[in-house]
Length: 148
Image 1 (cartoon, rainbow, N blue to C red):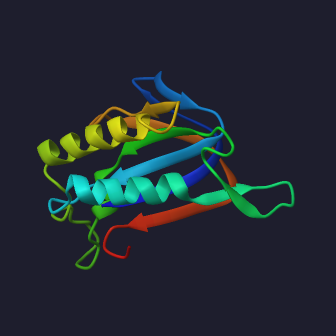
Image 2 (image 1 turned 90 degrees about the vertical axis):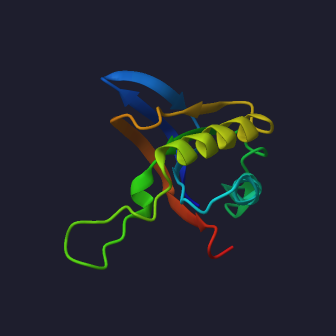
Image 3 (image 1 turned 60 degrees about the vertical axis):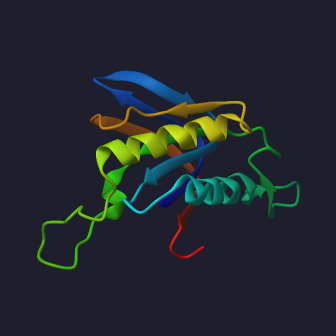
């Protein structure tokens, strides 16, 4: 499982030119799910993401977590995080989870995040989405279950 976490001043996701998810200060999280991923792996990444201290305190140090700053989450599924570009120029997505498995885990992640974060917005699984954001920093972190 892979989470690409971007600290944002604001972000939104639209489908067919209609905004379906929008947040202010917080994280835009692109979520890639592999066929081998489980709820336990999701729980581990969620705990790590929620606990990250990447917001600045009064001294300009990255010392504050999402909850410390009242931050929001925008969660967007993105199977292309499992693109394999080793052969040729056309990426292979064979390592990405099946749509059924990925959607089930994506929905699980949304539900779990709502247990601890007051504002959780989301994209639309499998849809052609347009994502816009103002990356604050810029600050981007990759959480990969293979390396945690």
